[in-house]
Length: 155
Image (cartoon, rainbow, N blue to C red; front, side):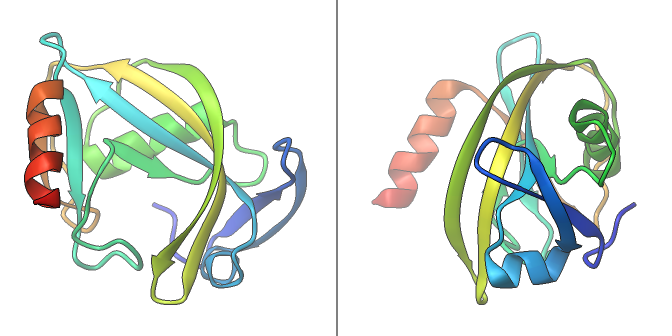
């Protein structure tokens, strides 16, 4: 498993590598870097979400996508996404690349995400064994359930 001081791949707006920097330093300085985000659905169309573990260095305890992370320098993004899916959620499945998105956000604690995120989707219907250092809990939600939760939380 990679650690918080691992080197992240710094990129320009076109996702071309321009260097590397330590993970925490990258987020402290708000440097643009390469990342991935994985969304898994089951055969019933439910989306698998996770609540980030309390010990995460940012966004601890928040609900998020199935998993996310950063490829290492020279690591193919799709391979990194599957690696991280196993590390966080304890399973592996085929993933399909569906696009790329860039965003910048203050995530609290004087940390900034500035990412070019590669998006992946997959289907999985088997057992899940989340890593408790990464995941506090998980849930399978339909689109209607997810929308209702968002509305309820905004209330």
